[in-house]
Image (tube, rainbow, N blue to C red; front, side, top):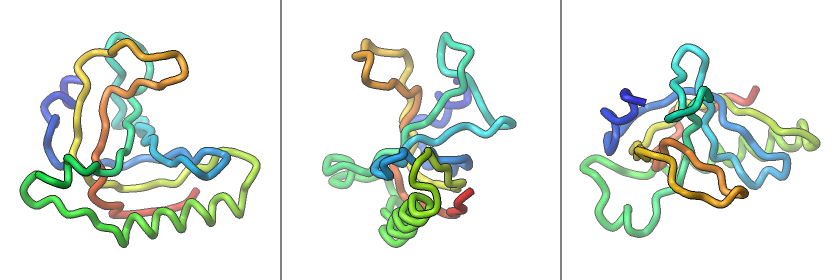
Length: 133
């Protein structure tokens, strides 16, 4: 977690598998790779990172050098569709190298049980590599 805090607000490049929900509608959870994983605060569990699209407020005043690569987002969406066609009845994974602005949550806030908490969010800039598994 200390490493995440140092990177808060910085543009970073991360590698790992992204879970694609059975429905194919959600593919926004980056899992840590074994060698690079860190744990979520006050838990023994790996810190999963939520991939978020940039919102209006972020795009209104982005960090210097930030530019959303819509072509890579389209390629990722196509990879999701292909994974769902190959294996529609289960959760799929797609290995990615993704770049974006990291935002770190210091402590776990109160969240409803149905809402999942993430120790960090990555505001998507681009997918550098996309490899269905």
